[in-house]
Amino acid sequence: MTFRTRDFTPVPPHARPRRSRRAVRVIVTDGASVLVWVDTDPGLPGSRWYVTPGGGIDPGESSVEAAVRELWEETGLRVAASDLSGPVMRRVVVHGYSDQILDQSEEFYVLRTPRFTPDVAGHTPDEQLTLQGHVWLAFDDLEDADAPVWPEVLADVVALASQPDAWPWDLGVVEESSVPVGV
Image (cartoon, rainbow, N blue to C red; front, top):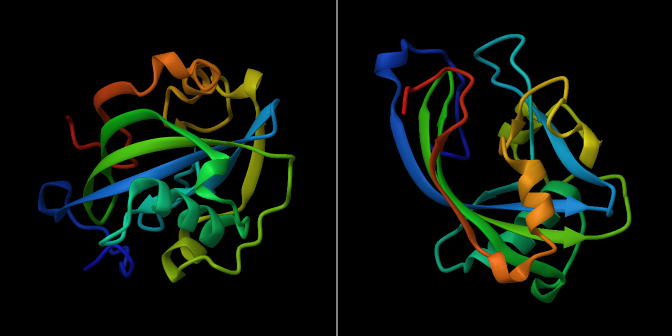
């Protein structure tokens, strides 16, 4: 099993393999809302949450280079590293899924851009299976969305984006899981 190819076969929670990686996330905002993906765990029917674009940092990549690449792969939007602000937040997140546990050291960047419709042509096979579309969530709706929002503090991070003297916010270790790990 690797990050890019998973079979999503549920295993007993105590038997899930544990993986680690470095990753980036991009908070894409039009000034009134944030672009998020509707994500799922295929091994847990009915699961659903919102997540910002992003993914793993490839060998030899800086975090900002990975953010530019991930944004292009996941949304079709080409930007320069200088278009991104941050990192605005850092954290270690534990994601428990039906088939694995992923320990992920993340850095978050912000991109301010007019609203657009993402192009999903660059989605990996896993993303094609798990991502069920996109939504532009209004800032006011982030804390009361109809599904969990990852990161849980996205509304706070959006507010922090206009305060560069406060960057990066270190969130420490948190858990966001479809099948809890119990961090």
